[in-house]
Structure formats: structure tokens, C-alpha cells
Amino acid sequence: MQPAVIAWLQNLLRERFHDDLLLQQMPNGNWCLALPQSERRIHIRCDFHAFLAEPGTLPCGHWLPKEETPWLPNACIGLPTPGAARVPLQIVEHDEQGCLLHYDVLGLAYWMLSRHEELGSYALDPHGRFPAEASHAFRHGYLERPIVDEWFEVLGRAMRITWPRLSLRQHQYSIRLTHDVDTPVRYGLIGAGRLARNIMVDLLRERQRDRQALLRAPALWKRSEQRLDERDPFNTFDWIMDRSEKAGLRNAFYFICGRTDNRRDGHYPPGHPAILTLMRRIHKRGHEVGLHPSYNTYLDAHALKTEADQLRRFCEQAGVRQQTFGVRMHYLRWQTPETPRGLEAAGLAYDTTLGYARHPGFRCGTCHEYQAFDPQRGQALKLRLRPLIVMESTIIQGLRPQDSRAAEARLARLMRACHRVGGSFTLLWHNTMLEYPHQRQVYESVLKRHQELA
Image (cartoon, rainbow, N blue to C red; front, side, top):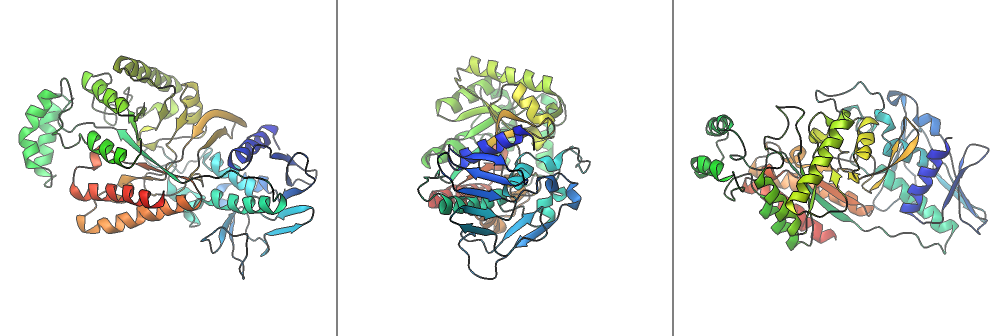
């Protein structure tokens, strides 16, 4: 076992449970968790190399005790066991020496959190993304469960039995509302030709769009030379901030600061006075400004750094003072390990890309922030990862008003899953997807549910 892997896992356990935990690998290959000045130990079966096999061949059983057990997390009937086709019904044994766990929780954590599964994958979608459908979690039906967090609950219970006086960390549920600014306004910051195209498309296709806004489009376009017109249907930034501040929340807004694909990147010029004014207003109200790198930067570290430096310059011009900057990749494009390497080289503090475009759920098996790890070079990165649980279009794209309740229920189910494990429900909601009353209704239902859970 590489020392760097053990050190990274130890740091993960210390962040999650307690600063004094010591992790080592025993001569028989199993993991051993210890505390200084305690003779009691937790031994964990190690099947690490099983997780390094071809993902398509990785088995997945299910631990389903026949009788009530204190080891299962609350509200869990059973637990999936990626990497093991079968596990004993008695998953944990304990005596005066400590505990023995018969499933490789740490191998699972490494495999899921490092995204080792995605290394060298050819099962990519048209945007070069590893799709949910190709994942082990989707194929075995546990994508909508924070499986690493659930197994860590089992490990935490073993710690309480082994070291009854140990004060484990308490993690509180939270919500992260984030917004990718692909198109800040519908009728501004574009050329006259694109304005005419947008008006024509809206007249012919978007029959629900506000006709008054269409009539005002030329005036909205002209006014956007200095600031975004509040009457533009996509300018929902103040509405978003008003609702969040009322709920005691601070949101993150990620801006495009470059162009590597003329068709797919934002149609607003980075550094435009109206965008700087928007950044300034976001910052003044106590919210966060971040980077939304352009389409092809996920494999181009140089372009990524250039755009990160651009963001810092624009923020300085706008009077935005932030110690660190976070990021979400455009179109959720991500390749392990190239993308996180580029993000770290660009000096970005955290990333919140790791979710799927077509399915909600727990791509990394967790809803807790953690330190990134490069599975190819076998080294920890400074970059922090905040997994994305769901993007709004996955739930409400093409949503009819009469189906709003079903969308609300699905989002609530994901929120409850995060709440059960004391994690963060990270939601991506574009400013362009709050134009219609039923979209706003679903968004506000998220805020209401959060306040009920918090």
C-alpha cells in the first residue's frame, strides 16, 4: 500500500471523526485504526486491490441483516457492498480488545472519493463526460445514497464501542446554493444579430415567455451597455439573493472569464462594466464570486490558469475582496486526474463539479467536503472537493406546472439523505431557470424544506 494513500485516508478519518486517529496497514494486509495511549484497536478487512480492478467486473452485494442490529445507520434497512459480493451477516465483531469490521470501508472511500473508477474510461458522453449510466453506483442502484457516509456511520459506531470516552466530531447538515452564470440576461450583452435571433426564437418557440419582455427587448439590450436591466427575464440575481438572505444563507455565483468554444461558452464579454457591477453587488450583499471555466479548460491547465487570473483581475476592478476562489467546470466537464491537477495549478481553493448532468445523486458517495487525491500519481492535492448533488435542469427541465410537486418531492428526498449523514446538500440552480412561476415555486420549496431540516 502506498504511504501517500494511507496518509490521505488517515487525514480523511481525522477530518470526519477525531484528530488523534492513527491508521496503518497490518502485516496480514488488514487496516488498523488506533489511538495514542490506548491498547484497543479497530481492525478492518482490506480488499483494496479488488477496488482497483476493471469497474465492469467489480461485484456488489448487499448487507441485509436478518434481525435488528445496532450497527446499521438510522433509517437504513441494509447497505450495498461494492467490491464484495457477500459479507457476513454479523458485519462487526467486538470484544475487550476492540472491533473487527468485515467490509473494506476504507477501500470503498478511496475508490469513490478519488474517482478511480473514471481513470481512462472510454464510456464518455458527447461532451467528454463520464456519464452516470456508466457508473457502478447507477448500475447497482445506489447512486442516490451517500454510501461512503453511510458506511462511515458504521465505522463511527465501532469507534464509540471501542473508545467510549472518545468525543467524535459532530457534523451538521447544511445547504450550498450555487449558480453558474452562463447567460446573465436574455436580451443584453450580445450583438444586434444575436438579439434579433433571440427575439425570433422566443416568438416562435418559447410561447410561455413574457410578451411584454419581448416588446421591451431592444430597450433592455441598449440599457445593458452599463448595467443589467432588472426587467430582463434572466436577471434573477436579486430575487435569488433576497430569498437566500431571508433564510440566512449566502450563495456562490460562478462567472465565465474566457472563451475556448464560441458556441458553448457564455455570450457575455468577461470584464464588461455590467458584469463587474453585478459582481460588486453580489459581494456587497455578502455572497461569493467564483469561476466558471470555459468549455475546453477541463483538459487545458494553461487556459484554466489564465481564466482564474482573469477572474482575480476582474474582482479587483470590481472591488471584490476574497481570500480564496471556488470553481465549477462548464457543462460539468471533468476528467480524472487532469482536471483537478489544472485546478490546483490555477490556485483555486475548491471545486464543486462532481455530480452528474443527467441524474441526481452522490457521484463521490459523499455529501461532505474532502481533500482531492490524484489516483494516477498517488498523491494528495491541496484542492478541496464539494460534491454536487443535483443540478436543477436534471429535475425541472421541461417541467410542467402541474408536475411541480413531484419535483419538490424528489429534491426533498435528496435533502433528507444529506441531512441523515450530517452533510451538505449542494444544489446548482442557473439564474435562467427561475423565469416562470412554477420554477420559482420549486426553488422556494427547497428553501422551505431546508429551514425545516436545519
